[in-house]
Amino acid sequence: MGEPGTKEVLSLDELEAVAGLRTGRKHVLSILVENKPGVLTRIAGLFARRGFNIDTLAVGPTDDERISRITLTLDGALHPIDQVTKQLHKLINVLKIRDLEPRETLARELAMFKVSADGASRAEVMQICEIFRGKVVDVTKRSVVIELTGTCDKVDAFEQLVRPFGLIEMARTGEIAIARGRGET
Image: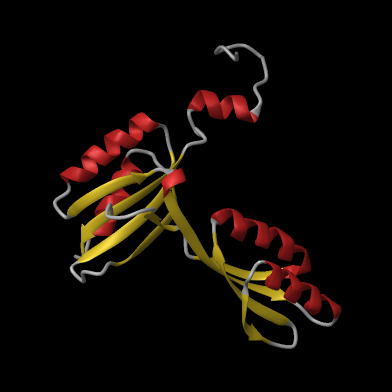
């Protein structure tokens, strides 16, 4: 399979598998940290130094104003994630880290789409919005702005359906997540 010096052509999937670029295992890390300046920079820097690409990153307060929750999603092999989480635990301002299991996690994303919609296309865009339980938050003669909340797959599907009408602008928050059930943070 593509030994050095051979002229054998590798597919993109084979290259990614060999290089370890894609594992198919999406990790959602929930990190509780002290709400202090510079904490986010140190955490993001740790992932960057290890060569991880952060897919989404959302930070917000918790019920305790002294503590913030960082929800971070990335693709990575289990072993390197373990190494990074061990290093995260060593950071002074990190209080708790959980690698949330997909089956035991509720995850949502907020997105806003500005879509070209005039004349006949406006009714179609509004119908798609209704199907996805989106909310129209602004209307002009030539466009509508739609707010949508849901799983990443739902937001992606909505984007694909409205793109042909003319997607003018899009903003996505990144995923936030919480474990199902009682007690555990």
